[in-house]
Length: 211
Ligand SMILES: O=P(O)(O)OC[C@H]1O[C@H](OP(=O)(O)OP(=O)(O)O)[C@H](O)[C@@H]1O
Ligand SMILES: O=c1cc[nH]c(=O)[nH]1
Ligand SMILES: [Mg+2]
Image (tube, rainbow, N blue to C red; front, side, top):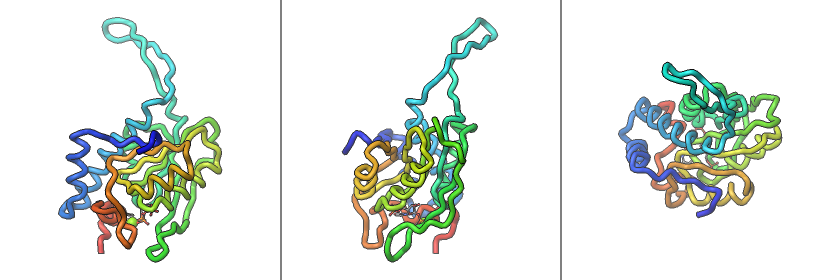
């Protein structure tokens, strides 16, 4: 693989992924599993955040601690499915800002269609963390990074639950500076652009709209 890519490698991640893939998993369970994986992805992606020292007094003695300036982070979920990852990310960084990138993938052309954008106006000195459970062809991810980059963030990271080799390649070639964090990399895409074996349509499974 490449050094832009971090794949969560852990027995518990494998366990959660297996439950997530199972077609018998209910939307309620699916959302809970996506939330857990999103927290773990966010944990990895925030490993290099700067800290400032802070002294506190414990019941026993003064202690030198550190704090993170959470306002330096902006989470950008790609609607709809990315919303499923937001709770987990905000659980770890509750004071981050949130912007929304509305796009869906046209079923015929597999290219993203943009329908809504609402980002915080002030990105200077802040990092952008894009959230979308699925990195398939990579078209949506590349468009999301392009949009985020136009706001001038200090850096951009892309967090997804599941990815296909095609999507990783497309995103990493288009944006070599964007680090990608994923819980698993699958084999390929099928003729409809779905990840194989995958987990189906993440948005439909999160929101209970499976046909
Ligand atoms: O890598 P790509 O080939 O662009 O595919 C990935 C995109 O497809 C899914 O969204 P979808 O179009 O299903 O929209 P939804 O979240 O509203 O269901 C997924 O959540 C990504 O945004
Ligand atoms: O497998 C896939 C591919 C794109 N979007 C999804 O939700 N699932
Ligand atoms: Mg969908």
